[in-house]
Image (cartoon, rainbow, N blue to C red; front, top):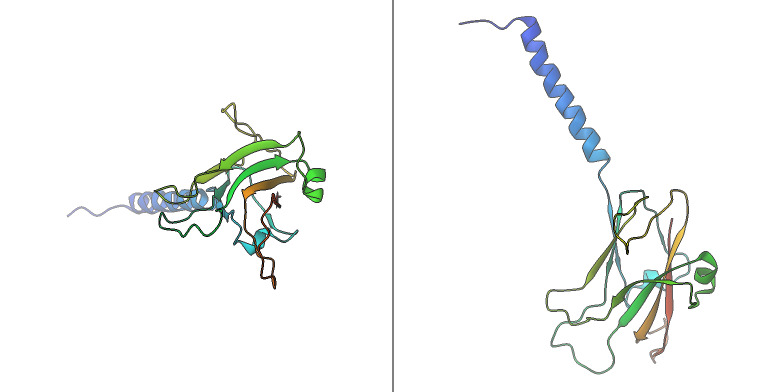
Length: 170
């Protein structure tokens, strides 16, 4: 039998330690996915202080309203358009011509489950319809429901109108 020298033993251990350090670094810097269920039953969206803090390379996943195919048609289902808006539009929660339409949630009965839109938070985008985010800035999303039945707490009758719900991305 041949015995390994101290140097040979150390090089194997050192290589394993380097590999472990690389693995820990990669795991700590991977992008996070922030999921928002954007529908009229999500009470987090009806307040004026809902925000999501993201970093560059993170993803914001918007899940559209979804209903099973056998959903009773007692009223309209949620459909909406989601806009990227300026802070002033967000604070007033109003629709303006300067708003950038990002997505339309118009398939509430999609057979494969809720439609998901993903926004990658990145400084530069290779896509013509992508959006470029600057570090340290706030970005605001607002939506306009076209078919909407929202029950305010304590109310018996739903609000059926065009309603804006706003969310801040820090």
